[in-house]
Length: 443
Image 1: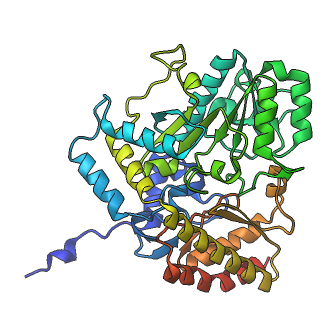
Image 2: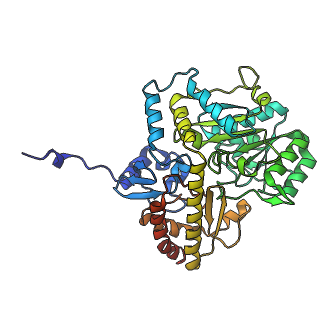
Image 3: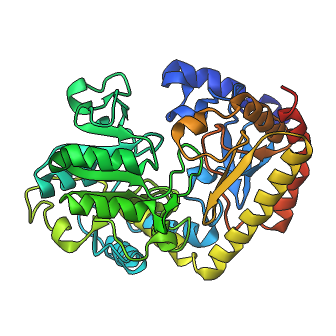
């Protein structure tokens, strides 16, 4: 008798899947960084994950340092989260109507984050920042928004802007398809530049609706908010905005519930408050979700009670809220301690390996988040981040990947740990570092 397995079609490899994908998906990916454009090569197509480990279509196993870009803070396929989603799915995938889980998730977020009295759930961080901007403009009756170069707030037209020729000029479109009319209401400043912000507000403070900032930039690599004369940068932003009748929007889509229990605000939020905050990633536990929130009187401007329209068919859906609740439930102080300890161990090991290989580098962190810049001096601005040796990072990345460690495929990203990154997992990463450091040095 012929074994039936002899006629089974082999599963496609990552290379085959990538080739097929490029014929039906632009560049073969549904989010640009996944294409490996900045590091080269073929991205592994992941077929399963558990804890801190990934498995690709070619049967290879990797230690994961991406964590779905943040949300997998309890590790992949965490039993508590999976069971919560399974139970929710058994009751229905979406209702288009209020459901208890969204109330519970809103209560959990407002209990954790002091400045947030009310939140509204959406489906992504991009939706959250887009909606927060609309709300800020309605609340102030002004149009202009200030953002900082290197801070990413999703693919909102008004925030895909590049700096103009001076601090008082409007920005230029930063992406094809973004109109000059849209970009003109955005002013882009260097991150951390207090003098430029002060000058801008002196000239045009009455036009500015809001400043939007990443609570701690982590999309150009991790750049902790700088202090000056004992005042943190975020507090300075809040005070500058409020003195001119503008609002401060603190984007915690990436840092929220990851940098600390209360996000970046829990690290530097003494004596000041943002007016609006945006969230995503961790509060969905791996499912699509976002949220924006703030003081009740601001949030009360949203429809149906107020004039600011915002809606979403799948907003607050039962699967995402179940995953988010289960994730936050697993994030007690012991969880943050474990992740922070793992980050400290790995930061030291990376720096030690790169130093031994003679590779210029600096490790920067805030809370449990960190990144490695391949340059000698600390990074404070986007221009400085761009000056690092991205070729050295590419060599380092592929040497780590070949040894079974999956880093973010860009020199401008944070490294993400989870409670599943135990000592055994960390040892696998640390063992791979010397060879990768030597590869980085071979430029």
